[in-house]
Structure formats: structure tokens, C-alpha cells
Image (cartoon, rainbow, N blue to C red):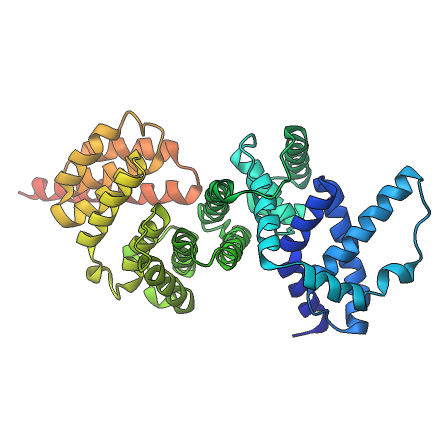
Length: 424
């Protein structure tokens, strides 16, 4: 690893801890971010010369805090700036700082930082954007590219989010056990949102959005280090790994969607799958099931199937039934219907989803599945109506193209039937 690479990696790894602590000191996102950036600049200057510190996070916190205090003093003109050597001579100070900062303190700081970013007053897109900027350190340009918007528009979005957080007066006290549990659930949901923002894309945009999936996995792993005995965080991390393992096979060379059953499974990342499967098994041994664990268990069954025919659809149906009890949702039922179609046939699946139409009238996947089930039953005209509705609701060009493929197939089959009838 090059000198610049190890410094960049150390700073990236330490960022959540350092930002969390600096936010607690200064109680202002902009001030904490400025202090951290100044500490990073000093790290780039000092670490190559003096070698890596024993605890990069402690070093960055100490230097960032000094820098932030100096900035406040300079603005207030209350005291002169200290000499450079008072800040940069950190040999003893770093050791003292590292001794005082234990894992529990880090945990509370990071959790507070993540929770502030997922403040309930912010729209989901702003939550994700500010978390990627503050916690993950992505540049505004990187975030804008991932969200497919202009850089200035993203800058405004992040600025508005920070202002709303400041106006909300979020408390900075160390959270108690109950509040910590509540915050953890909110943070896990935000990490899941970040992943889905990157996962829900079309083939042409996928490369720009992959960093969102990777960052969500990094944040999930961070949570797992902080809460090593939480089976739901194990489940969340496993779910993201198992889903992202299929990324190389999700689109063809033209950017068209490749359904799970048609994917080249040799392209799936075995390393991610093995890590995800190990986490699923570890989580289930706790015997405290939760929604992320159930979803991860479903993804694990797909990952363990060497071929589509080996998929245990009966077990997937049972797991979706459990998920329906935990998180009643028409979308969960819709997903379960796919398994039901494999186990009990398309007619049973269609009967299951038809009562959902009012609630899912604006949902692309409902009409895509309905059209597919009707097509399997030979009800081609009804299938075409459903597919037309799906195209109208498509979120991406790839989704629309995938449905048009089904319509083209219907047209071709209809023409073939007509040709046969005329021949007779």
C-alpha cells in the first residue's frame, strides 16, 4: 500500500469516531466538519514524517479539537492563536487521549452522529445525502453523481439538511440504554435506505451508484463492530452483502435487467456470499429473529442454490410468511406471491395479490408481477393491460425495457397462434 493510500484509509476508518467526538465538543455540524478537515490536512503533513499514530481517531480528535477552538478564538478575537508547535507536538498528548477514549465512548459518539443525520424531520433523500457527506466523507460531487443530480442542487440539499438539524436542537447528551436501542433501529433503517438508493438503478447508471451500496456495507460493518451481539445488525450486514454479491450479474452488456433466475451465478462474489452466510448463521443462533434476519435468510437461500432449480421456494414462502407477521406490508405479500407461484402455481399467487391492487396502484412491481402471472395462465390480453400499466409506472429505463420484452413476447406468441390458425 502506498503512503498516501494508508493515510487515506486510516482517515476514512477514523472519520465516524472523530466526527462524532468533534460534534459533541462543538455541537455544530459545520464547525465539527471544518475541525476534522483541518486535522486531516495536518495528518497529511505530519504522518508521513512521524509515522502513523497509535490511534488515528484519537490523534484526529485531539488536533481537530485544538483547531476548532483556535478558530472560535480567532473569530471572537478573545485570544491569540497558539504557536504551531503547541499543536503539532502530539507525542504525549496522543497517548493520553488514546487512554481516555474507550470503546463505549466511541460507540455513543458514532451512534449520536448517525442518529442526528437520520433526523425524523428530514426527507429520506436528505438523510442519506447528509450521512454520506458527514459520516462517510463523500464529496458533494460524488454524492450528486450517485443521485444523478447537479452538484449545486446537491450542495443546496445538504445545506438545507444541516440547517434543519441545527434548528431542531438535537440533544447531544450520551443516550441511555432504551434510547440507544431506538437510535440503533433508526440508524439501521438509514443504512438500508442508503443501500437501496444505490441498488435501485438501471444498467447505465449502476457504476455511478455502486459507491452507495459499498458505503452502506461499510456503515453496516461499523455498526456490527460497535454492537457485536446484536443479531439484527448481523442480519442487516448479511442482507446487504448477499444482495450486493449479485451486482456483476444483475445487468447484461446492454444495461438490461437480468432476472435472478437467469443470472450467471459464476459472476456472483463468493467472498461476499461466504461472509453473508456466516453472519446469517451466527445471527440465527441467537434465536431472536427480526426483519433483517428474515430477509437475510431469504437472500441466503438464493445464494446457496447452485442453479435456479435448486432454490428452496417452500422455505422462502415460509420465511415471507414470518416476515408478514413481523412487518405487515402489501410489498412483503407481493414478494411472497413470487414464492407461492413457484410452490402452488400462478393462479394461487394471483389470488393472493389481487386484493392488494388498490394499495399498490402506483407500484411498478405489482403490475409487472400481475402481468407475468396472467401471461403464465394464458390470459394474454389482461397481461398486456397490466404490462402497459407497469411501463407507465417504471422508475428506470431498464425496468420499462424489461416489461417491453414481455409485451414483445406476447405479440410474437399471438402472431404465431394466428399463423397456425390460418394454416388450418
